[in-house]
Length: 410
Image 1 (cartoon, rainbow, N blue to C red):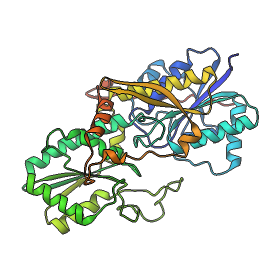
Image 2 (image 1 turned 120 degrees about the vertical axis):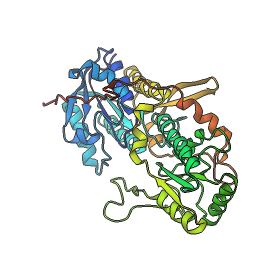
Image 3 (image 1 turned 30 degrees about the horizontal axis):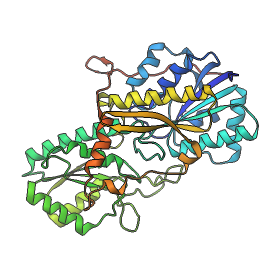
Image 4 (image 1 turned 30 degrees about the vertical axis):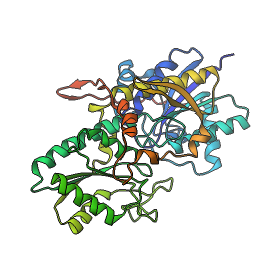
């Protein structure tokens, strides 16, 4: 027997280029099922549920729904709010009862899946029939139990392009600006920094050196590598992951003071490129420039991967399909069937398994010297950046949607 009731969807954590495509997939699929009555969105993730800041997606312009996959960041609003107490989980659960929520879809990473898992377990304890499904999201690509995550393909497509262009600039100006350092996002896993290897099509191409969290930073070996690169090419473009660590496990650059940690206790990072610049100018004695794209790299919709957008949409759509079939307590995952031709299948992983695991860049995909990645990684990453996603243009610039947010008051 079909489960009838209302649906709510929320986005959590750092935005991505394609997180909204996942929402579009879920909403358009939900509209096909008569058992799903109202389709709600929680404003600013689970915080929106706690505050009862909920809006009605059925009342939004259908063209705005269609425009989700052409709009970056989080159209529903996001946050990094951490559920602190059992009372908050119970409050969320009671609000779900109040709004007759029978379908809950949460788009996010490890911490978001942990929250969804807690809600799913409480519902089971209370014998409340609800379907809870996770929609994977993170540019970091560090969610375990899935081949890759929506958002990753687009961030490495965009950042690789930036690295290529920085490489051309350095090649032209190496007599003045000899070294260029670009800081990539990625707290504990080097997937994003590694992805810029796609720009390295010939030996001369940038990047020449990639620094990864999985490889402890050794100053002496690094300086030797930079000198070797300069001897060979007279210039060097270096990509450094913000999560690069010293041998003792501390980050080479972490923020200090009042805002040094987020609500989940994660250290706030930033400044790895400046750290590397100072070493080069001190030890190698050449001029170095650095760039920190920061959050710009994760919302580059104007050069997003069509493969990534399509897969994000598929993840949202599949989550609704599975929920309607009776599945609860799982996150949608991708299982790779082949690299060439590239093919994936939809699979699932338990929310609890995803929440308590993390996927580093495999050691066998890192070169022996620790300063680059192997051909196997290249073959893994290349299919994820294929195709250019369509966008709407107005007056020569992208046109992105913004929901009107028709608030639900009960």
